[in-house]
Length: 197
Length: 294
Image (cartoon, rainbow over all chains, first blue to last red):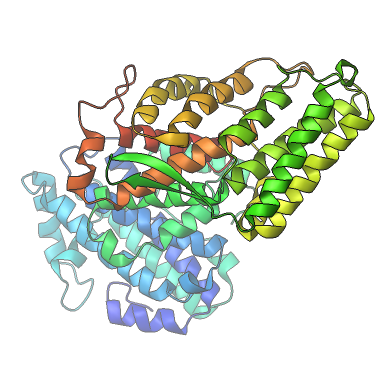
C-alpha cells in the first residue's frame, strides 16, 4: 500500500510507474481538488482566501491534462516533479487558505480531530490539512476520508497492475458530495466525449 | 471544453510550461504571463514580416518593414504590376474601374506599402484572389489585359516570396488560416479602439489603423452578394491583430514605470473606457477568437 501523504515514498513509487500510469495518477489527483475549488469559485466556502489554492489547482489540472492529451517530451519527463510540486503547492495553498479562516469553529474542530489521526507517522500541519480536505464543512471528515481512501485505492490499483489505467478510471473519482453544478458539467462532458475514460 | 470545443491545446501546453518560479509569484503574475503567451501565439499565427516597436523619441508605435532583399527586382515587379493595372483600366470593356475594390486595394499597396515586401505580397495575393474569383464567375471578361494583370500579380507575389523567405513562410501559415465570423460586440471594440490606436501610432501604422479598422468592420458586417455570411478580410485582420499582438508584447517588455503612461486615466477609449494596454489585450483576445484559437 502506498502512503500518498509521504512525499518521498510517493516520489519513489511514481518513478517506478509506467508513464501512462503516472499521468493517470496525477490527473486523478488533480481532479479530486475540483469540488473544493468549485466551492470557492461559487462562493460556497465564504471567507476563504482561496486565490493561491485555486492557482495551484489550475496548474495541477492543466499540467496533467496537457501531458495526458499531448505528451510533449519536455513536460512528460517532468510529470513526477510536476505531480509532487503541484501536490506540494496544493498542500501549502490549502493550508494558507484554510488558516485564513481559522476563527471558524468548524475548522478548529476539524484540525483538532485531525491531530489525533495517524495519516503518517509525523504528520505536518499541511498534511493534516490535506487530510481535513474541506474542514469548513461539518461533513468534511467523511468527505476527506473518502478522498484519502480514493487516493489509496488508485495507488493500490496501479501498484497491482501498473499498465491497467483503464481499470483505474473505473474507480470512483470523487466522494458522493460533489456540488451539483460540477456534477452537471461532468455529465455534459461525459455525453460529449463518451469515449473519454 | 464542456461545449465540445476544448481550448487550444498548444496554448495550454505553453501555459503548462511556465516555469515553477513564476507560479510562486501568484495569480496576477501568472495572468500576465498567460496574456503574454496569447499575444506571442497570435503574432505567430497572424504573421507579418515586419517589426512593431516604440519610437523612443515620440513614445509612439511604428512599423519597421523587412529589409528589401533585391530592391531592383522589387522595383521592377511593382512597375510591372502597375503597368498591367493601367492597361486594364485603359479600356472600359475590361470591366474594372477606378473605384473597384481590387483597384483601390492595389493602389494603396503601391503607394502606401511600396517599401514593405510583406504588405506588397499580401496585397498582390488579395487582389489576385478577388480578380480570379470575378474572372471565374464571369463578372469580368477573360480579356487579354485582365489575364495579363492576373499573371503579373501572381508573378509579382512569387518573386517577393522567392527573395524574402520570411514572407514565403508566412504565406504557408496564412494559406491554412481560416477566419471566423466576427462577434457583434467586436464592432464596438474596434470602433472604440481606433482613435486610441491612431493616437499612439505614427507613420504608416497610424495610417493603416485608419484604413484597416473600418474596412474590417465593413467586410465583417455588410452582406455579400453570394448570400454567404460576411467574413473579416484576411489582409486587414492579419495586419490589425498581428500588430496589436506585437504592440502588446512591446508594452509587456517595458518596465512598469515606462508602461505607466499607456495605462493612465488620461489615455482611455471614449465608450468602453479602455486604456492602451486594455485595448491591446482585448484585441489579442478578439484576434485569437477570429482565427479560431479561442
